Image (cartoon, rainbow, N blue to C red; front, side, top):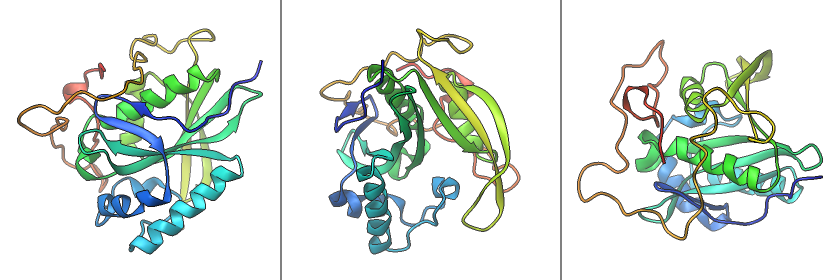
Length: 240
């Protein structure tokens, strides 16, 4: 039995909506990213310095999608229905029922929120719904935020690939491999209690006051790296 390849679909959560990436998303994407050095530090390209550069990157990613090598989602702020980032299914293999999740960045008001965890949960659940039995991530070993997110969703750290890939600045990165298997195959420690998100027609409205969604408390950077973001305070599990 083979999995079904990803097709255009909208996935709705509490804080975000995911919809297929389009060229007309470029102006809002550049507005969300401009001036930020956040998650672009972990992508294999430099952050765009103009809307034209952002358009070129989106065109390249959509060409990769057209060739069957990826499927990209725009990350929409559910309050305003505008794109503030993107994320992708990569290395899609329907025969082996596995795919990667990557090319993730998020800016705007959601950059310091719990939304990152929700994005990954939505994509894991959707992959399982399509018949994939293995979802995996390849993270830069220095990406502390990414490692925190993997722990939040119950992903298993499977190994380290040393001197695996060059960063845009020319330095070499070690890559950490994480994976989640479908419940019928195996369960990570703690089970799959968090994988209960379901797509719905509309997200919950924003609270009447205070930041939305609530950001994690500020933490001092460690060794020059930005503090971990996108996680509930005190290391508590994310409960959708």
